[in-house]
Every structure is written in structure tokens, then in C-alpha cells.
Length: 215
Image (cartoon, rainbow, N blue to C red; front, top):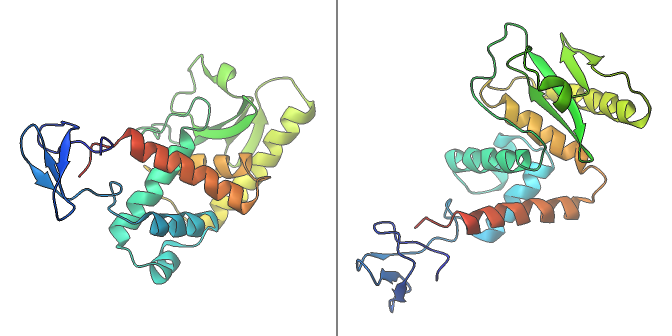
């Protein structure tokens, strides 16, 4: 029961009522516990994660699974944010489009590739974080190094370019999280579908457990 917190006083101590609800021992507030912030059964969440990994469109998922479009979009956005946390140096901010021309930093750190919007080209952190820049749809090396690392970065940029082109259009405030999604997919491309699904479900349910202030 301590996975929940009272909506009114944030206490974690409850009695269980005869009808299955919880009654706060501190303020006596009675509520029905929810399995997660979306109030969806775990089996349904697993189905949505499967559809997401298969890169099915929002409309197709809505046809296959009984869920509101609002909840689905919220859950998909959360998945992308959690994917982003698996990347080095991630910064997903809505003000990342100050430059007239979009510039991406492409990096390889801790055995993972990633792409991020660069809002300030004068930042001294650029050469520390990234090995390459993408400007006007072309990849440019930042450092004089070759071998496997550059091959990986160029391969990743080719993959990312194909994925973004196929996407058609993305709202600019969501764009950093789509970069995170495709970075995550590329980093885990050698895992089986089942392994990818289990990985995503674990970080998702870990998030639910760590942010259990919901009723």
C-alpha cells in the first residue's frame, strides 16, 4: 500500500476498506487506488509499448487498442522522455530553436550515440559533447578522428535522416524527444523485440514506482 500517497496530505499510511478503496490514516480521505498515473491496466500498457516499438502510427494504435487519444499521446511522450534519460548530456527544452538554421550535435559517449539540438553554437561545451555537427542536412566532423567511432556516427546520421524523413513532420517543441527516441532505437537495435520491450517496460514501471504520488 505504501506505493500510493494521499492526494490531500501526502501520507503513505492507509486502511483498506471493504470495497477495495484506501482510507488515509492521517486525514481520513477515501479514494480508489490507480495502478499508474494513466489508470490503465498493465496488460494494456504492454500492448501500447509493443505497438510503439513497431512504429505504428497513433491512428493505427487507436484502432487496435481502446484508449483515448489524449492518454495515448501522453503515454507516448512519457516513453520518449524516459528514452532520453538513457542518453548522455540530454537536454530537451522547448527553447532550443533560437537559431534560424537548425543545427544538430551528433555524439558518441559511454558507448551510446545520440543527437541533440544545439541552441548556442558559441558554447564551449560543443567539442566536449559532440564529435560531429549536422547543418543543412549534411554531417560534418568536429574532431580529427577516424576509425570505428566516425563510422558509427555517420551510420547513425544516415539512420536518423531516414527516420525523420519518413516521419513527415514533428511539432518543434517535441522534436528533441523524437531525436531521443531514434537515438535509443539505434543504440538498442541489436536487441530482440522482446528484449527492447522488456527494457522499456522496466524503465516505465520504475518511473511509476518512483513517482507514486497519484490516486
